[in-house]
Length: 393
Image (cartoon, rainbow, N blue to C red; front, top):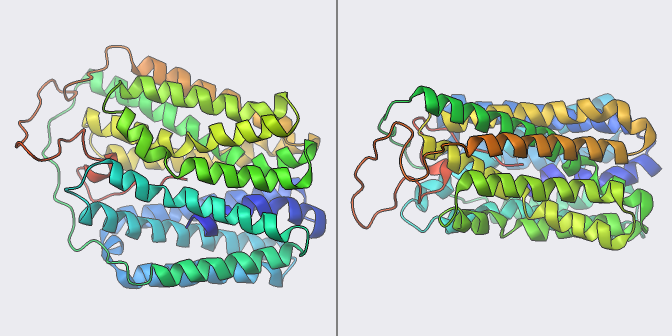
């Protein structure tokens, strides 16, 4: 899923230079992919049987691979848009089945273990960056897409026999909500939706922006660093979330991410580009982990579904919002994205006011059997009142 969804970012500069793709058309293709991802994510949410279907997993793996292989067969931006739409839907379904399997089979394991599995998205990003970095001097954009399809096929074969979730998750006991929990959740929802807008601009255009002011290898190299930094991030932020306030950590992670997004626009050169990649990679999956953990802690009804919807809509809006700025390069788009993420951090700071750090929002902590993980010890995606899943990226 990490390769199939995110290889577009390092390939984008090659398509600009060799395939005649304009900056605005590149933004539209990104939006098509995010729209498809929202469709796939909603499908996994509204039809829980999809989460438990091996046929859905295998069909989505094949479709994702096919869309990558078909990209070099045309120069039509309309066809590219359809292919990226399908790739987005397929990657979401791959992820929803994988997450269902992960949370079902690791339910009794320490919470950092699923965090490491989520790092597979980062590993896919790193592999996609290495692939384009190796090919950019010896092949064209078509070869990059075909190589990505081949890599996706290999990874699909390795995951072909993944066991999906065997049964629907039992609904969580309702604890009720209060006016204060609505206020806290509203701040969290605003923060996470704004993060979707800001993060996806960097996730789409960071390589192209770095490539404007650095040697050719730096952009793809930076994308590799993003992936490598993302691999451990969910597990590490999840561990920190058991020691410190989640809203405080969320605010911190968002500020760090905003700095990383703004760096290439404010300071040129290779060191700034690599620091930017490191900060962005270390935070974007961690923000998802912290936001969903906070929503689960509040015990707000359908928190995962609502947060996922806001985040996904934000991803669709992000490229559209910055499209008018792309005529002047990518720096203005990155600065706007950084400001949006800072606004998300401000909303997270509001969330800290009076936040119930040690009890549920309703003020009643349910007794927990000894020796079993508590609601806050398990990953956010493992506890929800409906069998929905979160899909980071």
